[in-house]
Length: 206
Image (cartoon, rainbow, N blue to C red):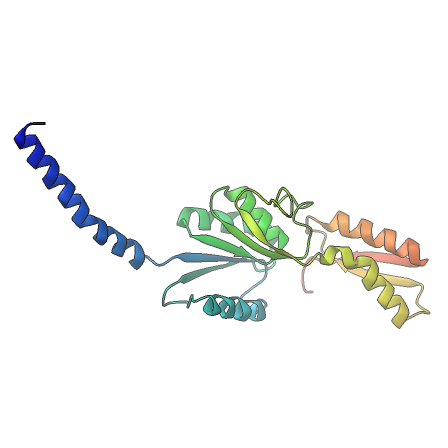
């Protein structure tokens, strides 16, 4: 390497080295953005949001100080979820949190790179969110309460409370992708208890 080229190389390297701390500071200044994808509304999710912010704060992340949170709500319209999920992808948020299975599925269809954290009642393996519980793989992780496995228990408790009732009505949302699974679980549970159930569709509050 000639003397001139050596000097140019050292100057270039020195300039780059000087820029590294600036770049690091710039990265630190750009606080992470968390996306919150809700199926209902901010009012309906108020108790979830309170716990969500509390958990973040306990982990050292305070909204507006060192983390930003962007909220999207489908207002109980499942068909709006894909577009809302796409907004987070376009926005290039750092991570997305979902509290419903349908919201998580919308994010799964929208991205395979942005980390998604879920807290749901359904089985994440059967739902197609993760490959397995001990090795989820992909960009999904979270917790499941497996409330879908409680259909028989709920029906049994209701039968104990009202033993003379031989026909029980059940309200289910037909727009929920897991409507068929819930109906099947309830049918199985009712036969085991010798009860008749009447499933009615309820897709909105009215």
